[in-house]
Image (cartoon, rainbow, N blue to C red; front, side):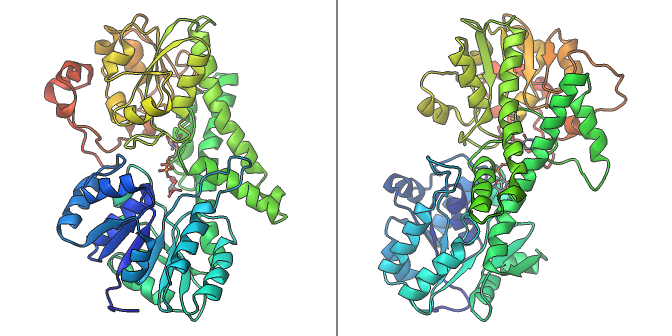
Length: 490
Ligand code: UGA
């Protein structure tokens, strides 16, 4: 290894994970080379443009390019020439023919590193989410072809929308290493800033490191599906899932997070990780241990179908030629990621049923337009809701949470709203004359509420300051006259 104690780094794969990791490692003071086979993406990143929406990333990308610590290339050989540590950050999507993870990109990176002459003092660090057993298999490949080079697995837990914050201030670091190697010492040096700030470090074997990641995502998915299952029971009994979740959350062993009922989880991680974990368990002969994850997935997919059924019901059973507005296309706020987006799933189902669907999203409009040419993608909230007979709020952007129901009402044909994320205040919307409906909530409130449920009090980070919204739309937001920007932390 050259240049101790400041190793040179390559980050291979510059998607949501890799681009953020490359930028953040440069921000920590390392010399970083980002590598991707997508020449367009490399051109964009080299010019200081982020290929996706991630708050805070573009500014750090530019400052680190300017500081000369960060550069990008399509050449994996350049990475082998220049760097001591190679982070593998490529995607592991679901295979088209099964529930298992597709590892072709990870394998291609290892082949590329070996073919380019990976040196004996190099360290390869996997960050991609992989099925348990992958690291041991890749380590054997590296040991056979590049003796002396080492492999470690260091799973990443960042959330889209908070990727920079989560990378620079992780809640834990997990190092999957073999005993007696150099990997732990090198990783400790790379992450010394976080470790000095008391970030817990778990040093473990390869299998456990791989499992931590999929177990964490499986647990989060299970929490969301648990509350969505309760929401189904509430629908059958007249209970209110928001008040139920609020009451559950007061038990510290349960806690309030990831108990927001709605149309369920999506994105490029939770859905495919839940499926790949089950597929791997079956291969290992322990399928029954994870068969409950099949139910987690089923509850999640049912949540989307329940939203579509509720829309049908509120349209009198016939969506044909009816004007439907969908607010939200991204799978979550603060992101333009539409992979496995519950919002777009609901929108396309209603479109298939004959409705005229107009979708608006503050960041994901371009992606939605590319992938769903059959949907009308509007440029603003008003553009989407004008003349609508029903409005569905399907991504919990703060731009939608702060909508003023009285102002919005003037633009729709019928004031009917489905709150697909449980983030609107039903009293305010009903008070402004709207029919407010949400999954797992009674059509009319059954009880007198003495306090706002914690979910409604919870505030997200600001995404788009009110002042940046089109002037024609500012009147749509609560506190619009004051141009209030919510600065509360997540
Ligand atoms: C998820 C994990 O949270 C990260 O820790 C992990 O690193 C990442 O996957 C990954 O594997 O790379 P992310 O995909 O960014 O992060 O999304 P989440 O914040 O987990 O949200 C997932 C979905 O659940 C969203 O569609 C969100 O709207 C939904 N959700 C979240 C609910 O329906 N209810 C909730 O209470 C919380």
